[in-house]
Length: 455
Ligand SMILES: Cc1ncc(COP(=O)(O)O)c(C=O)c1O
Image (cartoon, rainbow, N blue to C red):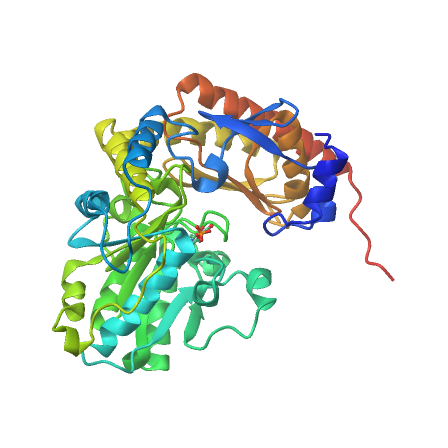
């Protein structure tokens, strides 16, 4: 799209997440409005939002039920006094989120984003162990290629190379293991490979000393590693290991929560209940900033006592459990439950997966993976040698925008996560746009000479 001189000048006074502004200026996108599954840029061009903004707009943009919930709450109260009280609607939110979470995960605290949720969960776990006779348990294990947020603690738990090395040294007390994909070529089957990757976590716990390990934080479907989709057995093994060594299992469901994988949470899709779930993004469908942590109810008992015991959770954020966010969160949950949108995600997922599998005919797709509507496609130069093909991802980012399509594109893979409210015609339209931009990108990538190393 073309941008004005004023827009260009202002773009140079801000930054776009994880992007070089000079590069962005070559192919800018300045959005003006959104409705349902579409965005429009400031020139009026329409884009299909195949990724819900960024795994956020689970119910599409501007959903009427959410607008109503927000409007009603706005007229009543938009801010509660965090040090003196709590909004009644926030208590309703606690009840509603606890009701749809698995097992006895009923202890709920609302936040303003995913990083606040993961950061808070890790602080909660550390304080929990200090108050339950294990003060030496403070380390968190997480995975290379994982992402848990941009704040210092969440970043330290993250394992995405370039996103973290710029800010090193990381906080102490964070240990990494490899995701199952790392061992993939060494095993004949994906199942065996997952078994190995999960069991390797036990070796790390023992090597680090179990009395120092507080928690294991993991995304049930790992986005930044390229929609890493472990087997259910992987999580069953992790669950057993965490139980054996009194390690708190935290599922970072900031992407996977709220119906996308075929159940309210991926924990339910996999049939494995963690001790804590962190969520955000889709919980508001993008209407308001949101996050939440849901912990085992019995863990909360470690935080109850007399005021003089000083065992309350020593933590807070000004906008945590905000009334507007709570009202919208309740409406999102109700909409998913009442319309069985999680079950719809499975049907939608089958339709989408079949279309994405069709891209294999171009000889540059290694695999289609994911659960429900959260799907990813791994790109390779050659399906026999599995040589990487970053030129294809780079080209796809541009051809998709040109075709009027917003995807999550990494040089080695791309992902989709359309709104759960999309109908069949909209899904077909999205798939046609994916195919069109994919074909154009393959053509471009095959004809673009590889950049030569500068002398
Ligand atoms: C898995 C995961 N965890 C945590 C976060 C951080 O959430 P936020 O950006 O809302 O702080 C993200 C954001 O992309 C995420 O994908």
